[in-house]
Length: 457
Image (cartoon, rainbow, N blue to C red; front, side, top):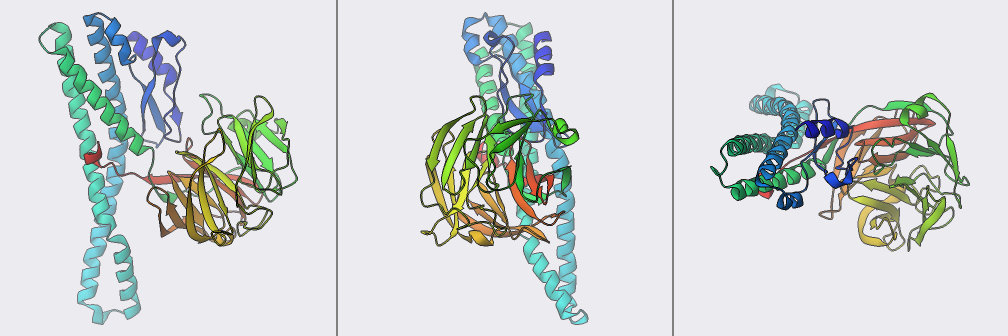
């Protein structure tokens, strides 16, 4: 257990997102790996290390098998405690919201009974609001069921821990294979639970957090969601055309407090502000073309280029603000995406999932939303969210779900603090939106609503 505690202290990550990442040990022969993540009381991600891979058990003596199995259960206990803490915190919010909803329903009934004494306009407004909120009540019931599921996890782990402790003391008193099977089953269910927690439906966006004031009115900035542990570099690109230079800052703190950077010269100028850095490479739209370029920062060379067939370019199907923003590349929990428009789809938005190595289109979805009417857009968990504009009052009002090929109209306020948004992208590791707002680099934290259906675990 001393080795367990030492390794745990080295690899616990505190992040803003919920991306599961692989952490390699100092000695590869030990074969330790990350198996789960959850959020702490402040909404930050905590990744937890488990015992060695199960293939090691076949090479160990019976006592070592039991010790490793017990360590695995104990480590699962820590993850479940964090998950329980997060769920209980969210549940308090849900219960409070549920009370407010039911209170509103009661008031509505009272108004309905005495509608003659109320102004007709007020009555209609309350009725419309209630119709909007009533579908949330069964969803809240599901969320309370999720909390019970986490409690079930806790009880099962406690039972396993107790049985394994007794087994260590009284060899042969319990069947090892049966206990091992129970541990594996519980671990698989916990993995599934964690994976579901990594994604959710966008329900809220925080106020803008200003990181820096620099550059022109238009540009983009980002961090790499697949960067290894400790790599917090910031990438910065000023302007939307005829520029080839990408700035690399060593860290977010460096970006905020200094102007020390390394400059990378791209082989071609970029077009628009839809660039993205992903797994050590930058993906961008070559100026005056529908060519996508993948440029590797380590080799300072193009590793792949591919035309996005039929995609409009050179201000044919730009966002509402213009700026050669015809092709927008973005990343979410599922990988690399391109959002653009084609003549074949009458200038409406097309969403394509791209293979990050070959840049080939893996799958595409055609929407009914005109691209020129969109202010900006971003992907979260396979859903494209579109804003209604780029200046003045702004909100996210359209969502297209690629998993079901359906869309809906929503109403989520996006604070447009400096009155002109020319870049808006989601980072799944930070669980935040990066934006370029009229020469200001800002961040928005997002709230995702998770429903873990127990019958699927």
